[in-house]
Structures are given as C-alpha cells and as structure tokens.
Image 1 (cartoon, rainbow, N blue to C red):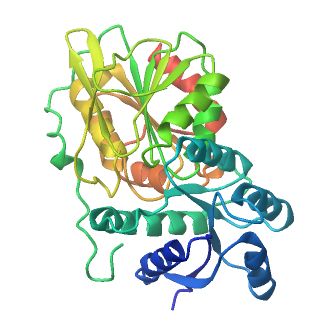
Image 2 (spheres, rainbow, N blue to C red):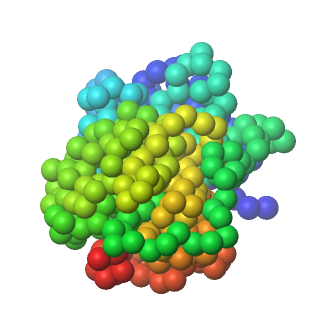
Length: 355
C-alpha cells in the first residue's frame, strides 16, 4: 500500500484547522498528521515526527508564518504550502513567502461558502500532493464524489482544422503551476523590453495575481500587468490571467486581444492553461509560440497539442529545472512539444521563434 502524505496544519483559527483537516482527510492519499495553533506548537509537534508537507498561515500570534518559513528552510527544508486570506497585504506577503521557498499558495477557505469549499477541495488536495513531490532548492471531494474533470470544451470550441495564416506579429502564451512563480520570474527577467506580447496563466488564487504582476513589473524590462477584459496584446507587455477568471486569446483583424470571463473549473483550474492554449490554437495558429512550465497535473497538455497541430511552435521546461514535472511531462507524452529545454534556455528560444 502506498504511503500517505502526512500533513501538519499550522493556523491560529480553530475553524480553519478543522476545515482544512476535513478537506485533506477526504483524499485517500493524504493523512493529517497533526494541527498546531502557532509555529511554537508546530515546532513541538515536529520534534516527534517530521511531516511530508506543512500548510502554513501567514498571520499568526507569537510568530508569523513568514518567519517560521525562513526557520524551516534554514534548518530542515520541508515542502510548505502557504494558506492566506485575500487581503492586499496578505497577497504581497504571500509573494514574499514564495521567494523564501514556499512551494504553493492556497486560498484560505471562506467558511460557510459551500460552493467555494466544494471547488476548493480538489485544489487544496492537489496543492498538497504537488508540494509532496516538489524538489526543494530547484528553480477533492470525498472518494467517489469527485467533481467531473472538465475540458476546455466548456469554454471554447476546438480549433478549425486549417491553421491560422501566419502574420508578422507573434504572440507568446505560457502556462505554469507549482513552482511557476519563480520560473516565470527567471524567464521574464531574461527578455528584452521589446519582446513579443506575452499572455500567462499561472495557477494562483483570486487576489494574488495583482501582487504577482506588480512584483514582476518591478523586476523585468518588460511591462507586466494583471490582464483585464479586452486588453490588447502588444510588444513589450506581459498580461497575467487574473485568479479565478479564465483568459482567452482572441483576434480581430491584425489585433490580438484578451477575453477575461467566468466559467467552470477546467482541468480543475480557473484560470486554466488549456483554455488559454486552445484559444491560442484557434485564433493564433502559426503566429503563436507556446511554453509549458513546472506544475502538477495535466492542465495545458491537450491545449499544447492543439497549438502544435495548428502550426504553433511549442516548448516544454525540462525535468531537471522543474519543481514538479507533471504538466510538461504530460504535454511531451501527448506529442504536443517541439522542444524540451532547461528553464534558463527558454527565453532565448522564444525570441528565436517569436521574433
């Protein structure tokens, strides 16, 4: 029998500890080792047993989650999933947590919102599973009641059989999940200010993508912003899909623009990489360069195959540089990838094919 992933939950709210415990216990692959109301209690628990994964609140009494995260990473690196509420301050702090070594961010459940909790169940369990597979230091409902895994069909029709005619302007589309925040930083920092327009889906909760885009904008030569409906894709600008909204590439004449809209979870995500990639295949074809980066699961794998079939050039991050090789590996296995590259080589190849 496969060993279960043992999780330590650290949160000062008894209600959140109970809710997260119930959510994680509903997955047969996960076991809640223990819970703790603050980092000092967590440290005592860890003297008895080292967990496989820690879920960690940001704001707690006696010691905040960021300070505890730093101590963990210095003394005994363990995969940490940050659990934060959706305040502006909290999202900025969560970005700092990712810099310090946290593997993933999950949205702290809004207690009492049934739909939110039901949708979060799979995402929270997936985040913990991804964290358990993470290589540190490298840059669900109850069983039997799992929600159907929807494809991009629910958001956009498949591309026409004929590929979109090639034009002079190129568009870069990128998908990432676990480990993607730092991978995207490395990728974008290597690009010149006049690079082709870029659209990114990074799996991230609502409220965090604004801070993520602002952080990247301050680090990169390109301009980075959270995408809004009808934004035009232009050279030198990176548009990041907002959390909890699907983002599609559309075209009107020579103009590429974005449609940002609500919809069901696709591949158990919103935004979904598959939705962006399918829209890029349908409306961009040969004018697109697609990149799939580190992340657990298979979101984006089918969409990348559709892009390649429509004439796009497609790149996957290699296993050695991924935190989790799930998404790129699935894309490779389906035959949707033209080239597999280490993270540090992707920007150069994108520019070579994207102009």
